[in-house]
Length: 212
Image (tube, one colour):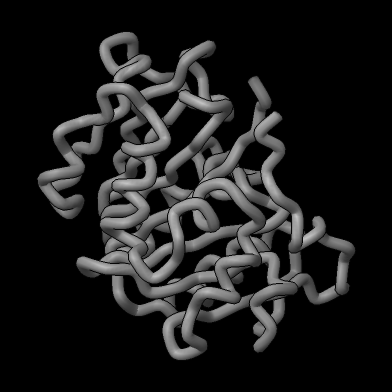
């Protein structure tokens, strides 16, 4: 079985440009200076409007940036972003072929983690025993059909989440391939993109997942 790790972030807001500015500001303050660009294929951060009042963010090659704690903080950066937005947010962490972890934050900054497989810790944050290996949404902002829980954590269930909240990008591209490839499937009016100000070398945008 091949191993890969991918993170997609979802925010319950339709204000894409404000969200993009907030995320880019957070990354810049942590030493990853970003600037707004028109070419999303070369971007390190792409933020786009999804469906049902949700917006989506993908980063490359800093996939887990918002799940990690800040340099001077004791909580994941996603918590601070959700608190500043005052809106429900979550990170969908995919590991290997069957492990799904949901890192969910409400608008007040309360964090709930569920899922996982090998470890009850995710980037330093603990998964309570009763939620371990049982990925499930709690926020009422998430459509009820998705709150029923992920039973098998299969590709099909992951793709249902993507198709429900981000129907304008193919699930395979969003969940499993280079984040910047999303830019090829989005209308410019629906997305904002940011690249590293220093022009750092990024991963190959034409990289395909190795299924071997």
